Amino acid sequence: MTTPNDSTPLTLQHCENYGPGTPTLPGDQVERLLSQVPGWTVTDDGKGLHWTKRMADFAEALAFVNRVGEIAEAEDHHPDFRIYGYRNVDLDLSTHSIGGLSRNDFIMAAKINALS
Image (cartoon, rainbow, N blue to C red):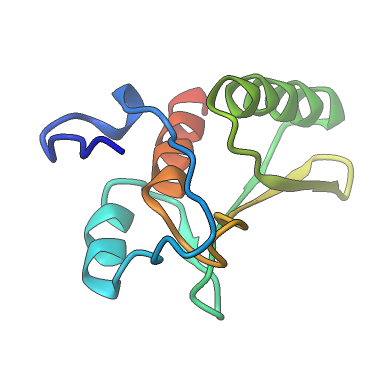
């Protein structure tokens, strides 16, 4: 596993495969990376990231989720998402294989932010 240079923007990094037993990010790293992904919050249980946005209408919400899906497929790191109230989008990121947050979650959050 390569360690990216901290000066490399998250949007230019790529997700890696983290197998079971890989430690989750320590709190200080979570806080540092969180500052690089405005609009995202750590979930109450500390194991994921959450983002929500109100779109203009259902078509815009669906198009946005489809663009997120393209990035998720390319990075092989998939968020949970929900469209509700016909134009509200919720996204949740977590590295399920390790049961918490990894650098992948922040890479995806940054790439999603670049879409909006």
